[in-house]
Length: 629
Image (cartoon, rainbow, N blue to C red):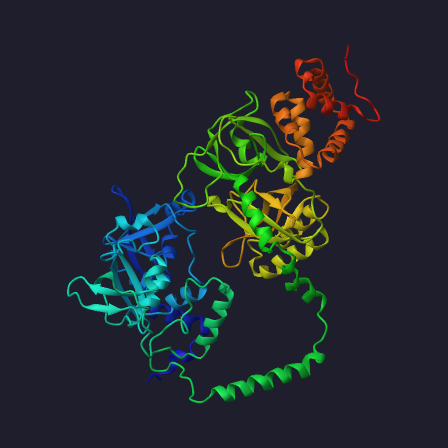
């Protein structure tokens, strides 16, 4: 006769497979793309609905086309969240997916929640439904107004937790409903349920959120699973790895958390706790001298938290940066976000050359698509048309050359524009804090304070990323990180670690004195062990190098009006930049010499500023030959 404990004697791999099969059986559901298109999705692994949908290549393609938008999944006319447990989707259910304009960056489920979802049976979960319109005086309860077009949303919860915790984790409701005494009113019976109640008796009922009174919400019922025992989706200060480690420690004890076995504080234990804390502190002081010095490898990956004091954190600095941010814009091609930029001088906007490279016809010397800039896109509700670019003055796209990736865009002179930033021009600092202002991920305007990575530390940064992802050698090899380190080690770029990735090219980089010193241009992207997009290091082209090449191009292309706009905007470092231009001319740029001759002999030579500019350029060791009568 088989022993009832035979299962525990099975090989670990088979034992785990049997456990997974018990928690999640293979099931299928139908995915509706539109009225005439439907696909069958077979789910064979516990997880979220979004993870199951990613099996479909068509869904992946749809997701790529809708980056930055919010995914809406409907079942039986009710919207479920993307992290809805797939085990609650019944055999043959119809799901409909679409994307709507996002009001905030879509959140990914925290690792511990995803794991909790995988380790639950359907009998341990509860679902209930909430109308997307609240009761009297609180009609608007959804973060995203687009969801109001759907009559109801479906919420999932774990038995033993509170209604408030389930609603908070869902993340689609406005936070205001948790600050006053709101309740759920059953649509069939009008029976009211407070948010502090546990969810066990709400299964498959439909409710409307109503305001009972304006007092503070009551405390959770004793014995409910609240914030102390479930990792909330809205806590972003903890990393996913920390959450996963916490869950692993809890699961190692093989003890299921229930309302009956929750930890309870021992009465009169505060004094004992204080004594233990004091003894522990004294013990730490005693062993402090025994701590060995950090090894070479530990030093390589050590974080120097003291450096955070170098970042731009003073209130007066941030206030000044907020004012200068008015001159930062989003660059759009045919209405779609493509990069960032800054009003540099006159009516000219500076961005990266690679932002507009693919839509520029060099033969005709014009842009093939409509380009516009938007200076005040700071909230998703803003829908102003922006300012159209009337001309691409000049550009270069040689990303490997410092200062070789830029584009100068001309706006109409009769448009209302903010103040130009050229007078705040500065040179690259060696170290310390910087601030980047732009539109990462095609979203609203943001600011990212970060620290410069000096050239001698770039290899250490690449090494740290390799160490954190050493288990992904099939996807990211050590050669990738070595190549990053080698390509940046000798180059005169500004390097740092920021959160500005896609669509942020062209963002201005400010130093601690609020000088514009560089243009954020790119990074070295890879997929991390958790599947998220990461960058080894980001870099920016120094504006001093860009300015030298820009002025040379403006002269060569004969853009006299633009040159006048530049000269009309005085700044302290003008002569230093001109010396750099002269050094470029010394290398034998014939086109530049011919253009200078044309400027001297043309009617524009009557302009005082222009004449002074040309004479300055002529003061070289090897004078440029000119035809001057």
